[in-house]
Length: 150
Length: 396
Image 1 (spheres, chains in turn yellow, blue):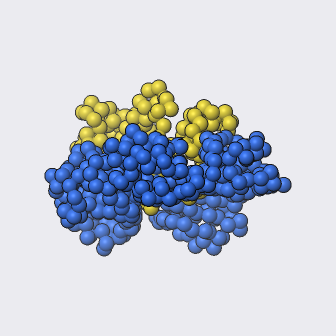
Image 2: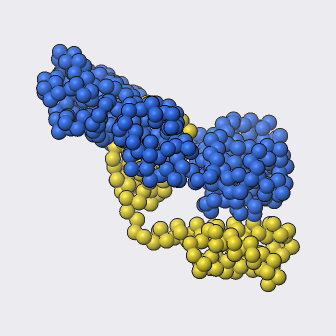
Image 3: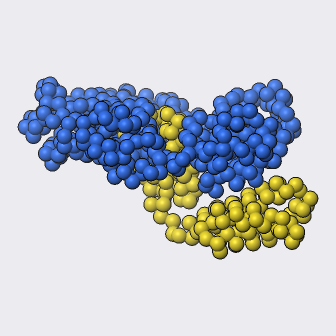
């Protein structure tokens, strides 16, 4: 395993430092990936570029998970949900947009056109408020993509 | 049994009758109901879910959309009380006075923005019945309204008067060579409903003058913007010659691309979308990414990029084995498609759009093969029959 690390060291350090905020975070990412690689039994038999790709992917995913976790640890409020403004959309555009969402269109309509809170939507739909937030985030991402493509 | 309707943006029952209301069995949600004194009792007969707002309208209703200039003549033209529903931008002409506002029979419901001269700002409320948007002011000449794709170049700016207010509905691009001093002198204010695309060094000057409803993309300095999905092979990738690119669309690299060619093609890739590459290029793609959050989707043998397709059994039969599916928009499976074929030939599905399955067995197969789920899997057989879907404006 030490041999594997030595052969990848320069690349891993360069990549980790390019995505982390500071050296310590970069070193943590490398440490975590190395630890995880111990359970990847055949990794030493892989070609060099695939080993590199595996480490890069693990470090990237770890960083994304860490940042998401950090965000979750902060108290969730409605103000953290994605902002979408129907102002400036005509009724025809609204119908067109909602038509692209199918299952989530009702939640988006209730939240942004009717003005219900996540809690109220949760009560009406039988889903939990965090699930409503998840659906809204997914739906808004897709609506923005559609608006961009126009 | 009457009609079932999904969500309605504006429901107009000003001239409705008991009979016309009775034709509707249920409406899920209504954002705005317009009714008159005479039809107010009918409100209780409506079987609806949530209602955002109700508004009593006394007489005629007119609807205008897009950009609308309101001048003294327009305000004087109506001889009886009229409500005007304006979706978009209303610009109040400088010839409008407080007297015109006081004496007109018009009342406005505005979904969008209203632009008025600074001196009228305090009085404009006289004609506003309801505003779902912003009231903004301008000082010099009438705001200039543009729709569609607008590119701000030095030539375009030279053609404007100093301190112009720009209203844009669509996409605004700032030229890489834009003279920032000229921009600051010519533009007083920009209101954009749509998307702005600009370069990093223009950010400060642009945001000082602009209000964006929707989205802004910032292109890092020195990057070339790619506006369409890139599907690159060993030959076509060579045109990039070691440059840096910015894109909001997917990039697909075919298997034929060698590591050397890839390395020579790009210095950096800034993508807010995703990148599809053979697993032999994965490490190099990561090394070229300008922002680490960009999703990298890899395939081992073959991939299929789906942009609106409907599959029969034959489509699944002809797939190469170990195919990775990337669903960008819609993929619909016909009833006849056997899920076994999906398991047989598909290695993984990366979903960025919607897959419509005809039954729950197909849905289960899709769920099992999903590696990325940034979209929806909808089992059409489970969809409730809601009658009519969402409706923008409904008059009963």
